[in-house]
Each structure stands twice: as structure tokens, then as C-alpha cells.
Image (cartoon, rainbow, N blue to C red; front, side, top):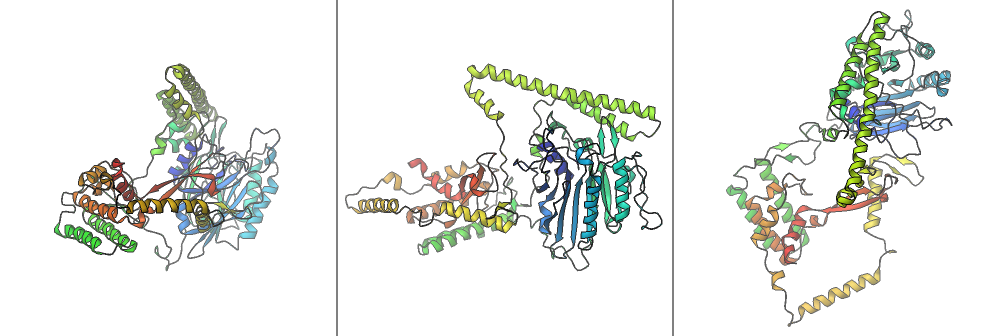
Length: 627
């Protein structure tokens, strides 16, 4: 898909379109990205690998060109990817190798600028590079699949030698015009024994790949060898306007977030792994195996939850076992683990399980542009309707010009009213800020905060090695983060402050000796036993429908009376012995980006916040009101 530039402003629209398209591999051309800028496409569930144009024309306002791939993370459980071809601008090769069968596929994304562009004049060099890829890698890979925007219109020219090549389904073109790029492209296809997928499948799913006010054309293609054509199916061209209307994404359109004028091309690649290969052998988890710990439906907890004699006896046995065992950390950890397992056993028995999300979440796509209104919505629908009339018409040229003019007029009206609505909204916001600047300072600063740049909190699964090279191996990435944070939270002997440590030990010994004095009077209010009211008050304050802690026990389950009584005795035991389960010392550290200018591939370029296990914090808050 030619995205016509991918920026921070239009990221929401393009990410929503491609995420809803749900392709495993997405060819992306004309990204307009630069190596000097840290921004790259951000789509949940995908990783981006791109090849940007290194040099820009001295008169160009920005960086043009650029190609890349979006790879769904789910398929990386079955495949290993590797960048193969990254030498010629506009050509980017990506290899996928199956982890079990070693079947390998080479995907090549292409972008050739128009023939009137300075970068599009060397079409012979561009096609020679593609020809070299065909001859070099055809024996190394099982399949090679090319795709992208070549700005080549081939009209009715045939891409096959009728008497020599294997007979494939006849291509039924909808764009009857050809240009010089198209002539060179067809000659290249014949020489390399390749064929175009466009026009060889269901004609009802075919369409023009580029639609603008200047006209319509087919310039984006999938092409492959005749052997690879046999594994391709369900070829489909979806215009961006149809994709936006299909998933109700029109509210994400803005003056700086316009939809691409190129269509999305989809195609299924059917790979046969052999009769002995099963789903389990390829290490593909089932739907239920994706979640190591299942979620539970706690909306309607039954009345007999933890009220059976068997469950009550288990809880009593756990408390008695804890009180009889020696006060060692190992015994305390074991008893707490038994309690968690007992609760899970009861949840498995009475509560239904929920594996993953029942439906795809689209919450992030509901945040529309603030200036979007019903008037713009009606203009958008009218423009889409006129565009379909223009695309479907096949007839005399003078009537075709009539439909084209209706489409261009409606498109011009929409794109004229869109920035006007945004300007009016911005003017209204400015007037509101000026009016509340003196009347309500608090609201004024809330407005100002929203005007700043928004940080992207996603952490790429990439790091730099000692030589400064980019590393994408997940084990190496996790080990790097682990090592850096260990150094941060566990300083080496060289950085250890011995004087401070001795000072704290002296204070501790002084406090202990003072407590051993016969005349020492302890604080009875602080040291009294934990009451049932304190535990009930703390647990009842817990909010429902919140994510559980590291023990994965929901707050709704803890509000059961038998569990409250059990926790009361456990908290009291931990309070008397001064020991508690080791897992309560575990915290989840969440990195936050310090600034959008910092490199997210460097672990220590993040601020850090930690969350301790929920049960540990509850035991502390139980007696916090005494302080």
C-alpha cells in the first residue's frame, strides 16, 4: 500500500486502517520517513522495518520515497525474519523462514517514482536491480513475491509470451492506458518469467489502485513467478475510502491527516508445510494457550463461593499449618503459595474463564478529531458515493468526464471545508484560552498541557550492541534490559557507600537496645492486634474491575467473607513475626519515556515507576491509619 507519507499527525488514521485490514505482512511504500527523525509507524501488534531514502533533492521540502514492511508479531512465533536486500533506493527485501520446515519466502517491496520525477528517470537501473534479485535468489528461496507502487500503467499489454510461458488465467485490465514505465515494466516481466496478479482473479474485487482528482489508474501491483502464482488466492483491491467507511474511521481524518490516494491490495499466500507438520509441531499456541494465566468472569460470584465444608476446612488447615511451622522464610512462602492455589482451585470450580478479549478492542479509534461534525460527515459520504459512480462507469468518454467532474467537485468541496472547520475550531480554542486566562488559571493550564506533544510510551523490542548495531533478537533485548536495571538497583562494590551503611546499622542497634531496656514503654496503639474491622475496611475499599496483582487474584474474590477471615489471621501472623511472603517484595517496574527526543532503544533513557504486589500493599494499608 502506498501510504502517501507517514507522520505523527496521520499515524492514527493509517494505523487504524492497516490494523483493521489485519494482514500478516504489509508492503508499505512512500513512507516519507528519514533516518534523522526518531519517528516510525506505530501499530499495536506489528513491528516496522523500513528503508528510507538517504539523500533528498536540494529543492525538496522534505524526505520523499521510502519503503518498508509491517510484520505481525503473531507470525513471528512460526517464522524468523531477516533483512536481505537494502542496497538500491526504493527496493527492500525481507526474508521469512519457517521455524520447523525451513520453507523460506523472500518479500520485495518496491517504489519507483513517476517518469517525470528526477528519481524516476533511471527505470533501467531500477528494473536491472529487480532482475538481479530474481536471478540471484530464485534458487535460494522457495518463493519470491514482489509488490509496491511502480507508477507503471501497462494497459492491455500482455506480461507473458503466449506460445512459450505457462498458461495462466487471462488478465482482464480495467486501466486501458499505458505509459513508458509500463512498457519497460512489461518487458522486464517477460524476461524474468514473472506475472502480475492484478486482473487475474475475481473481477468484482478488482479496482483502480490510484484515485485522485486528476483521474484513476492502476499503478500498484503484486507480481511473482508462474510457480508462485499457484499459491496465491483471494486477490482484492480495497480503496481507502471504502476501508474507512467499512470500519467507521472517517472521524480520524483531518487537514494534516488525509487518507492516502492509493488503494490497499490484499492477497492470500497459501503455504503447504507437508503432511507430517501439525499445529503443535510448529509451536503455535492455541487460543487458550496465549494466556499463561486465564482471566475469570467475576461479575456474578455465586453465593456458595468458599462456603462449602471442604473449602472452609482447607482455609482452616492453612492457618493452623502456618502457626505450627517454624518461622522461616521458606515455610511462610510455601503457606502463602498454598493459599493462592486454594483460591484458584475455588475460582476454577465456580467462576467461568475468559481467554483473551471476546472481541477486538477499538477504543483507541473512537477518539475523533475535535472539529469533526455532521456537515463534514455528509460531505465525506457524498464524495465517496460520487467516487464509486466514477469508478464503476464504463462508457462514452463525454459521459465519463461528467462523472469525473461530479467526483472532483465533491472532493474539492470536502477538502476545502475540512481545513476551514479545523481553523474555526482552533480559533474557538484560542478565544477560550484568552477568556479563561485570568478568570480560571487552573483550567487555563489544563488547556496548555493538552497543546504539548504526546509521548509514545511503546518500547521497541530493539537495542544497540557494543558496536552500535541494531539488535532485534528478543533474548538479547531482554537480557540487556535486565543487565542495565540490575546495575541501577544493585550497585557494584565500587559504588557502595560503606559509611552510610555503618551509620544505618548503628541507628538500628541503638533502637534495638532502647527497646530492650526494662523501662521502655511500647506504643500500645501501634502494636495492638489487627482487628477484623481494619481488614474489612481495607479490602472493601478496593475497586472492582481492576487489574489484579502478580498473584492474579481479582479484588472481587478477596471480598469474600471466608477469605477476609483468612487474611486477618495471616496479616496478624506476619505482624507478630515481622516476616511476610517473599513475593510481596517483588515490584513491576514500568519505564516511561523522558522525552520524545530520547532514543527508546537505550534502556536507561526512561523514567521508572514501580508497583508492588497488591496483597503486600493491602497489609501495609491495614494499619496505616494508626500512624
